[in-house]
Amino acid sequence: MIELKKVNKIFDNGFQALTDIDIEFANGKINVLIGPSGCGKTTTMKLLNRLVDYTDGEVIFNGEEIKNIDPIQLRRQMGFVIQNVGLFPHMTIYNNVATVPKLLKWDKEKIRKRVIELLNMVNLDPDIYMNRYPHELSGGQQQRIGVIRALAAEPSTILMDEPFSALDPIRREQLKDELVRLQTEINKTIVFVTHDMDEALKIADHIIIMKDGEIVQQGSPDDLISNPANEFVKEFIGEDRLMTNLALSRLELKDFILSTIPTIEHNVSMSTAINQLTTLEMSEIIVTKEDSEYAGILSLYKAINNQNESVKSIIEEPNLVINEKESIEKILNKLNNTQQIVPIIDENKKVIGMLDTNKLFLVLQKMTEDKHGDQ
Image (cartoon, rainbow, N blue to C red):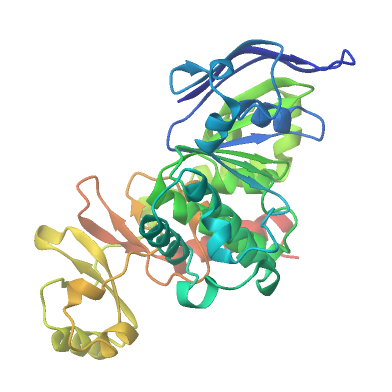
């Protein structure tokens, strides 16, 4: 756990950058610090790994005041991802990712397994990328390496300082999706600095809005949009976003569930699965365990190319599986353009249907047309 209690920061020239900052960063969640330039968000983040020291107050990390922790040891417990990536240009990707584990004197085989695991986690083939150098990668690939390098030594906390702002809009959207997906696997406490409200609303579990070195409001994206604290928050979030999300909040997931859907059990033969997919003219199908418990997704392409394998050995977990209690706003923030089937499960992980994305997007299109007068 990371907690800031009544933290102030006054620089040597007398400028007070932070005033009475109280934050408890949610464990295992994405915490976003956001605000206009000069509001103190980056200073707040840099307090956490002592790149900046605070004037008074308390900063508690895992139950201990950070001023009592050696800065080098503290930083080795926190991953750090910055805007310009900061990869070492003279090192291979393998050695970049392995930097901190080597400093911690991990044995070679453990380091190698960890690097391979992390590259696979962000869909970069280790055989292709381990021995390449940073200049041989695209900007988006370099940023992925920056993220997994921060994860290499298995820290509990990751600090991210506007990590995607230097990328083009397409790569930026892809990496936001990647971060949200990755967080479902790693469950790290992430402190993420941005000035982009759309980015914050898409990725955050907890948002802290700052202005002039003070916290103006903090809470979940839904909290902030439903109950903005003052005119500054309303203006910073944006009238269009508030109106859109107000309209979305009136939509209910139950109206967009296809409950009568084909599924197959994970213990059927591969030939049976292929026959069912081809008969239904489906490229993907939801796979269940006993009692309709969700197991994953089977693709026809993968089934055809692995006919000697069992169904349960090749099913995949899609980026997005929806709990029946999730809001439409949260679902839209997670949706990506490539996922065809979005399973919906209950609290016992039983499949109750799939998202009717066509109906949802038709409703959204109608909302947009009404808002803009069909222009």
